[in-house]
Image (cartoon, rainbow, N blue to C red):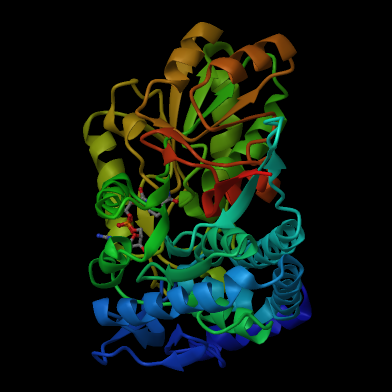
Length: 497
Ligand code: NAD
């Protein structure tokens, strides 16, 4: 970690805030208050105290933002040369990298994660801007050989105004995962960050403007799901909604978008299995699984939240893993511990209720099991890295997303049983297989019902590989070149000569 970032972090810890944080909506290239004048506090989950404020927007702000984006789409952005879009996105990437210290500290205050994870998220945001900037001038159509006196071609067009409803676990990364490909394709965007983590979305909107993005091409309206997300997903001028969050809200967003037949991408989380077979490199699997379940305190849609393990290696794995889990440091994200804060009291209560329920049903807790606080200040929303061992397949903690640092262990006796366990929930987002046996790896990869399967490294692939779920995990794919499809439609032109 550089000295500059540590200096920023130390100052923020001392003062409880950070200079240079925006506190207005970003609409039509300008900072402006919400029409109704509402405000909301941004709370640092590591201290439970406010570190900033932003507007509490309403449907009136959504209308202004969508009108601005519709105008920018019609008059400017869809006509911009793809190479010009590319230049702006790459310039934004440079600005993001130049401000890594400020953005990383802001993100930790915003959502609670350890500083090193925030710094990685900032780099990922820059990479997304570079990657989709690189793709902007390579979106080519094709020709159709009708023969005779006909010329026929398919051209890719941007879909128009797109809405991006963003969750709180990766505020900057989730925003840019949708916004960067949308901008590259020639769409304009209205972003609604999660109400508990809105500040860094405003910072990114400011950076895009500074990089030369024309007015209205990226608007950010902060506010609650009901006051801003709802009218945004219902807005008839929005042609695509990219949503990441819970199944219930995703269902509602889909119904809202259906009113005006807008397309949707839904990324709704999961209960993703990590299968540990007896022949694997067990020490590697232990280390990799620590990241799979405890990254961002388990508040990761694709977290490896279920360990499906062969009985013969179960005891050895749990002994090593629980020793490592108990030794993980917990504290305010700006001190860069292994485990930072849970984003909100509401989420902490959800996690606590899930683990208390498991305890009451007699499930063995091999490590952790309760909430805690920052060891220096005695404040903040924290949960211990937890292991629930030998959980029956029909238990709610196996079937339902907890979205916290809680690993559920399922013991199996055969590879066939491992596959049944892996596919035994209503979700289908990600899966990982730890094995040295290529036959078993390829067989399981073929048969697991998930949008992304990795072998021997849980979070392999990064921004370059398509990502999204099956079943209740949603549909549509983000990341990679695949994401551009969400923001392009095909127009066929056929001409008789
Ligand atoms: P949520 O789905 O309610 O919130 C996600 C986003 O949707 C936020 O920006 C929110 O303001 C917005 N929203 C809420 N109501 C809306 C509406 N009616 N119309 C449009 N937008 C609306 O999630 P939550 O309540 O913050 O968390 C609940 C659970 O969701 C978590 O416990 C976790 O299981 C899951 N979750 C998953 C992800 C993921 O990455 N897939 C991210 C966050 C939460």
